[in-house]
Length: 229
Image (cartoon, rainbow, N blue to C red):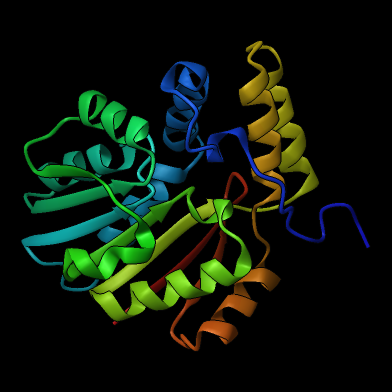
């Protein structure tokens, strides 16, 4: 068995609820750059753009929002597309929520400190998005969250995350080695080891019972899972 055949269960520094923003500033900048330059933002916007009959006004729940850059990108796209979107962005770390609400403020984005596993208490949304969030979860929690998203979204959901591959690991190491931030260097490599392959996603589809779940490998070592009702 190869060293990247199975998902790692090791925790990232980012997963520590007690860590402050000051220790993650380099990580935040890197995450925003990766989403912008390596396909994360494009994948989310492409899902919305290809949604048949997308409403002129709709709602989105963004799970594990992190720095809040994905909700801002959706708002920009919606404005260019002459649509109106109301976004609720949640994260369990209050430091992240505070950072996102200041860095990515928008009148139609609501930031909340809230667990994705209690999303039903927020009501129903047209669409749900999870970008670079699922790799922080163990398999059983992924299945649970997929079922919650399926049950509580009206139109569909989209998950964008990392494709687990040695070349992606090497790329993460190379991109972060010269930024001289130990937390970022550690977490970027580990994020890839906690990422996914098609076999993982196929298991999630079977275990969750969501036959409509579509799985796709995308450029820049991305793997997406999506569903439309």
